[in-house]
Image (cartoon, rainbow over all chains, first blue to last red; front, side, top):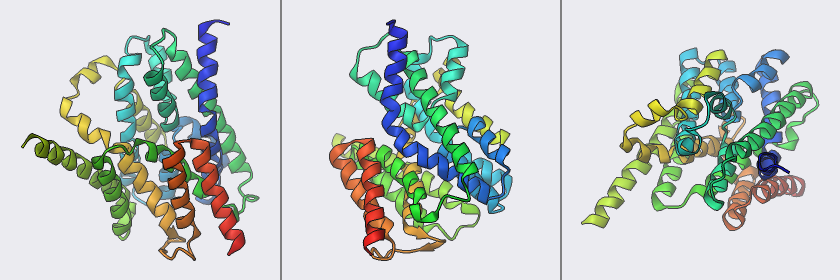
Length: 233
Length: 99
C-alpha cells in the first residue's frame, strides 16, 4: 500500500469518533433549516456552500429571526474567526503545496479536522504525504455532514424534540473545548464568554454571540498580559 | 447564503496564502489563541441553560445542566470525543426517563 493511501485512510479513521457528534449535528441543522423556512434545496446547498455546523446554525437561526443581513454576516464572520487561528497554525504544513491543494484543504478545514490534524502533526514526525491525511479526514467528515443534512431535511417531520438532538451540538463543542483549556488564562476566557453569553441575552439581533465571543477573547488576552507582567516583576 | 459561504471559505483559506500569512503581525497570535474557547463556549452555555427562550437554572427542571456537567467531567478525565458525546447524551436520556 502506498504511503498516500495509508495517510488518507489514517485521516479517515482518526476523524471517525467525531462523526458521533457531527451526525446528530447535521440532523439538527436539517431540522432547524426546515423549521426556519428554507427550501429543501437551499438547506442541502448550504451544507456544501458553507460546510460549517456552527456557522450554518447561527445563520439559519438569525435569518429566521428576521435579523438584518449585515448582522447575520458579522455573526457568521465572528463565529468563523476561529478558522483564522486554525488556518494560521497549519500554515507551515501546507504553504508549499500547490494552490489547488491549498484551496481544497481550506474548504475542508473544520473544528474536527483541525483537532485531528494538529494531533497528527504533534505526535508523529512530519511526512511528505500529510496532506493526504488532511484530505482523508476532511472528505469523510464532509460526506458525513452532507448525508446527515439530507437525513435531517427529509426526516424533519419524524425527528422528535424528545431525542434532544440539539444537545449533541453542545456536546460536540464540549468535547473540543475541554481539551484545549490548559492555562488559567484559557479558563478565564472560557468563563467570561460563558457568563457574557447569558448576561447579554437581552441584546437585540442575538448580538450576545458577537459580544460574548469578543469579551472572552479580550479577557484571555488581558489575563495573558497580566500573568506575564507578574512573572517579570 | 453565498456571502456567508465566501466569508467562511476566506477565513479558512486566509493563512494558507503565504503573502497574507507573512503580513500578520505577531501580537494577533495571543487574542487569536482564545477565539475557539470563547466562541464555542458562547455557543454552548446558552444552548444548555436556555429552554424555549427562557433561562432555566433549576437543575431538576433543566436536565441539560446535569448532563452537560457530566459530559464536562468525562471530557476532563477521558479527553475522548466519543466518551464525552455518548456520556452526555446517555446521561440526558436517563435523567429524562427517570424524572
